[in-house]
Image (cartoon, rainbow, N blue to C red):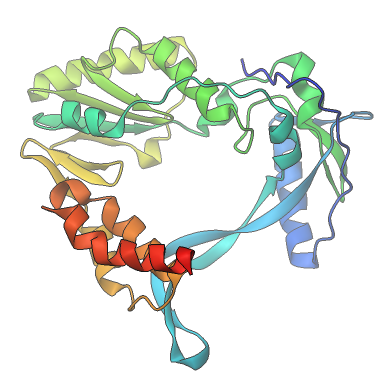
Length: 295
């Protein structure tokens, strides 16, 4: 269960709804109707906390586009729109949950070198966790259809990642690091042989059934010898780069400003473990950033 504990001396904030164009208004209408039908939200008549909805683009793959002065910039194509809630004011007042997430490098090391893997994805993972009834009103949002509150946890609440990770580690506590690795709603089952991996998968699925944790079967990959985890390819050979991400870096246009240099360094630093003397190679670019700050 997700609780929203507040810091002291924060007063509730009831924000007005935001204007939406007809396209965005229809996106919100469809989403609200769907959420009501499945019981995730309900109309609420009064709440001290009210947050506005906003509509943001769904992004597809990376591409390079030409803007003014023939400058090339990397961007992601818009493939649709989705509704989300702007909980920034609520999150500012929320007491932070400091439950730790696993270290990515250690998780990858434990996964590498196995013979078989099963990669499971939790179906609407956050939504499978209920919100403490006393905190429903804090999730209240306003839109053209009225004001509504959530019964279940959703993306955008500041402590949702910590709540979800704590829940998953509690469910799979006896299996983590032995036959499964868990990061949020991504579960990586592994085994030193086909039979071992299959047996581990059977155990994990039984625990999912007992705890009503539903996998998204369309995104699951079962009994495979390699896969992408946290942007890295893992297999019996060890840890390798994801060639798809390398191709994106290769297509990036020349960096001509501070933001561009920062973006490139961010992409490159993700794979610094595979680049000998990365710090020395990247130093000239970092010096450029330091010069910009100093003057």
